[in-house]
Length: 268
Image (cartoon, rainbow, N blue to C red; front, side):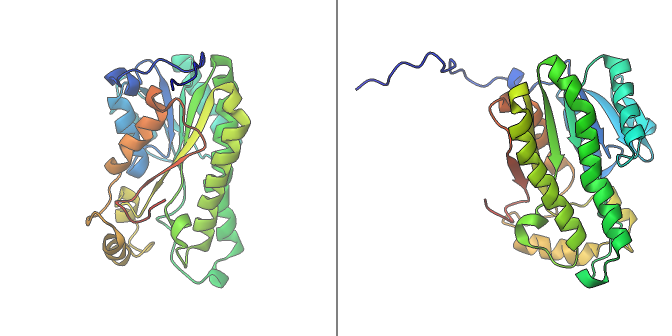
């Protein structure tokens, strides 16, 4: 029996390099001056995107790595800074196609029992990791709607799938980002704005190396490798391809999804 005709079924084609090209697109990467953000920004640039790097420090210097790169000093928890970031992108390129919500607090945190975490530290983590994601998204979506669509990629964390202890505020904040990803995908998908996330496991980044008083680098690294199928450390470059895919034409029928990049530490 032949399959019924479906006038809405697209013509199937073999994937090409154009399915992963970001030529002509403008991408904002928050927290993009170093670490995971820098690794993702490098990947987006290789795919042809024009980069707007937003960070608390080093944004202008980092932007010089990319053709016509733009650097903006911004605190994503400050609505004025976020608006200035968007204005800089629009002034330079006239459009915003991609937002990568990467800025977050993690490497400066110390692992401790949940009842010893101060309310002030909870608020600081939520202001950046959750409210910052909200503010940046709120600022770019009107422009994406006018353009007929766009891509938002949120960086969440594998800790939310494994129930990692002694970082309750961080894990809770990343769980909120995952929930926001799903709810936003439903809310703005009809406008052509696709919202997905990438969940890394413990990543050897600049921030980890520069904060020896923060997370216990050596212990977490050993534990992570022991629980991975692929027995090595994870680096920012390991996340770039997943983020590029979610920003590219090749993922045009995906929204509300999370890609876990952790070397086989968690299977979903």
